[in-house]
Length: 348
Image (cartoon, rainbow, N blue to C red; front, side, top):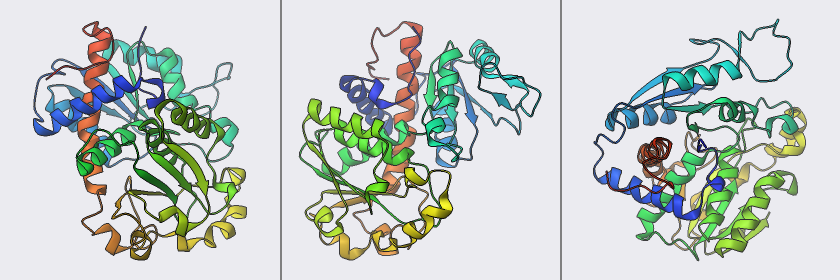
């Protein structure tokens, strides 16, 4: 059976720990031949800076080759629904696209953001799931409604900063921040997932109950707490949430009750500009570290002083995308080739 990397929740804790350990080794010794003769198609439905660069370079550094495709630009527009009479803009169906690419390459990476019209549709993650359904090679989520590669890069940065792979007992604050536009919940969903998976004491800080994340990810987080320890709470109070925090992770996202009707949400969002991460808030923490997935609008989401502080690990996290993605690709390639019955990774 083909194994994919769609969400970290689909992988065991032992598998994730093995990937993180391999990523740390790749960081110490970047070059190798673990992907020699392998190729990956990187399918971008949305723009990218870090994701494209890190995946292309990661494949190259391990002897592999990446092919970048942008449907609607340098590849045909793709249809994802069955039963559709394709007399519109789409030229070919995902059933053919995924199967053909599987004959050419050893892996497929997919980046496809929500359409921001109907969350009940977007939460199905149909683009990613379509590739996973029809591909006969491993599929990697390069960000859709979750961002599992970012999760691993984030955890690796925390492990490096705290000097331990054991993050249990750390107080972790995932805070909503203002942004002039309503954004995808992907990174917030993923941060909540991985922080609880690692057994941290997690606070989801958001302006109102309307900004609580989708029940799927809140459910994953609750299940992770039951399995890994730690705790989970939702707070709308800035002062108590920041008090004693070891980690502050910032992200902006749109309120799901207003999904697709952002004009109604905007006055609410505008009221909470003070959720910006600033020096006063960070001073309430336990000498806490700050991070963000990037890109970040300075002095909107976080101040210059916070971003330029030695306690900011956003650049380390961004670098770690390269290392964890190499580890993920190697794990998938070895599993697909039958060289590893599980998803553990040896030295490379």
